[in-house]
Image (cartoon, rainbow, N blue to C red; front, side, top):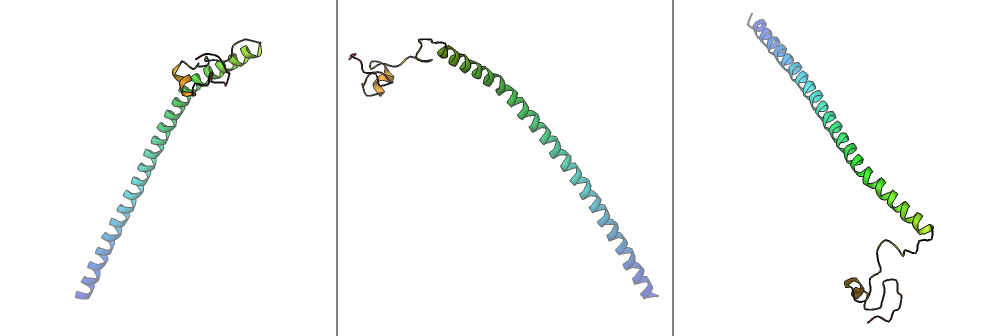
Amino acid sequence: MVKNHKLKNIEDHYKKLEEQMQNLQQEFQESLVDQQNKWQEQLGEQNRRNDQICSQIETPSNQFQTFLANQVTRKDLGSNSKGILHTPTKGSPFGMLLGGKGHARGDQTNEQ
């Protein structure tokens, strides 16, 4: 009779452990699903931010491309302009960086 009682206790203990394992497995699975959902939300938010940044960059980029196209068109139409910025002379701070050799394009002048 004692042997049957011990066997019954072992079986009960085994069933309790099995239930606990199933509960832990279910909790782990639920936690995993929750974590995956959080990652998906974060990824979606990051994609929205990236799209927002791209749209913010797109407008100035398009404006710059239009500006450059206008500059090329003006130059192609025979404009006498030598470029967007003036050429520094020897007396200017940038001209001094050129070693006093005249204009930045290497033009020789009589300026001193």
